[in-house]
Image (cartoon, rainbow, N blue to C red):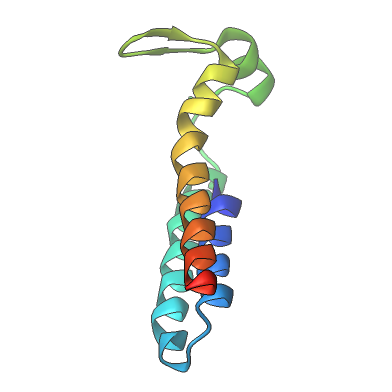
Length: 100
């Protein structure tokens, strides 16, 4: 997920390379870094029993969602489809800008 979001910003930064976009893109990268780094720091803290399951168990058992049971693969698709579409949107925007 992080790779798709950082890829989105990288595509826009490289594709729309303008001097006045340096500060906004830097701020976006900083916020995105903290968006993924802060939860990782909390997850890495010692103490208490972890309520999360290992990936192998998650893939085997899946998860119960509001619309019913989803297998591990289905749940991963549900989580990653939006970041993938956002990345594709950035590629489309840069392509349009390059062609116009």
